[in-house]
Structures are given as structure tokens and as C-alpha cells.
Image 1 (cartoon, rainbow over the protein chains, first blue to last red):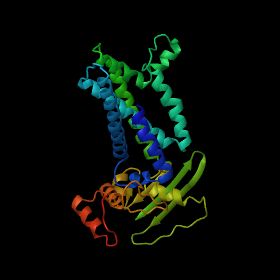
Image 2: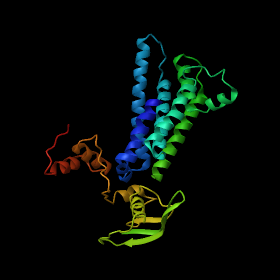
Image 3: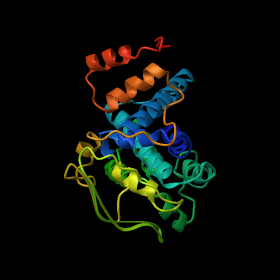
Length: 179
Length: 124
């Protein structure tokens, strides 16, 4: 999540506001969908590369994980949706300082609260409700179930697909708006 | 032919262009002048698909920029006031990138880049 988001959002925001190189892409005879897909593909590749490094370290330290194709699909969906969120944020936020604030107040808390490092079962019901609508919660649920060979939460896959489609649509919309 | 038909553009509540119409004929050389804040940049941004009008139409060769942006962008060439080259790429890579963006065939791209006389090419 972090790699996919930050590797797209920050360079794109700088490119749009300071170097203005993003305008060249938007003026080229290619659709906004193609530009967003290209940026998202770059984010996916970097995100997956980061994931492979972490998985390699896990195996080196003795973890035994079940890496079935569905595991990689979830990783890909997660990288894609956070890349698209990065594009959306970079196109919407008009200063580099505010980009950092978005990362600090949205991405970092999500990383900690989404059932990643500690169980959320004992948290208040209202907090759990919020946590359960965060996409990263469903990524960690699905990946944990696959890696540990537990029953797979298919609703998480559907929700991740929904978030991926939603963030892609939002990224295209703000790219077309272009202000 | 370039036509602005009743184009209006607002940034939040700030009107930048209000019900603007203009027709520029084929082969006509046209200079757009105006004081700061007159809306010149906004007009050019709408003409180059960098922003969309709130109402009205921008047409190039009779094609609507909002409805057929990819075709229209393929018909225009733009040099902006800012230097938009990617500083992390070499000159060759920048030309290659823009050739690809504008769908110049690979062979033609290589030949046209090599034709540029005053540059000693290094891909590094």
C-alpha cells in the first residue's frame, strides 16, 4: 500500500505542480484512461516489487506461507487501488505540503488500523465499523487467510474489486477535470 | 478551424471565461492578447484539453474537444510557456517519449530524432 501510493502520489503531484511534465501526457493524443492505467501499472509494479522483497525476507526468516495465484491477485488489486488513490490525491491536492498531510492523516493511520499489526476485535464497535470499510482491512484479511490456509473471505475480494473500480474512476475523473 | 462557442469556465466561484465565442479560420495567424487574469491561459488550456469548459463547446476542425479529445489532440501542436521536459530523462529519451506519446512509428521516430543536426547523440 505505502509503496504503491507514495511512489505515484508524490512524484505525480510534483510533476503536475512544479515540473509541469504531467501536462505533456494530458495534451498527448491518448485518453485519460490510458494515462491513469499507465501510472497505476507503474504503481502496481513498484508495489509488487516491495511485496516480493518483504516475502523474500519472510521466507529467509523461516516463515512458511501459501502463495497461491489468488494471493498475487489480492496483492495486485491492493497495489492497483492504492496507486489509483495516489493519482486521485495527487491530482486533487494543490501543494506538496498537503500531500504529506494526506499521507500522515489517511495512509499511515490506515496502515496501523487495518488489522495489519494487531487484532481489531477488542476495539469499540464504532471504530470497528470504520475499520471494516477500509480497503486495507480486506487486503490483510484475504492475504492472511490465503497465507495461513484458512477459509477465504470472498466478500473481501469483491470489496477490493469495488474499491479498485471506484478509485480508478475517481482518478480518471480528476485527470479529465485537470485543474 | 478553431471555434469557441459560448464557452464559460469557472474555478470554484471565480469566473475565468464567461460566454466566450471566437472563430479562427484555416491558415489564419491569430494572436490572443489581454491583461493578467483576462482568461487567456484558461482558453488555451481548454483548447488543449488540459481543462474542460463548464458550458459551451471548443471545436477544432469541427470536432468537439470534450467529446473527441484523443482525435483533436492528435491534430494540434502546442508549445507551452513552461519548460515541460522531464529533467530525469536525456534529450534523446525525451524525444523518444514524446514520439511515442504522439504515436510516431518506431522507425520514423528513430530517423527523425537522428536527423536533428546539432545534437551529438548519447543514450546514456
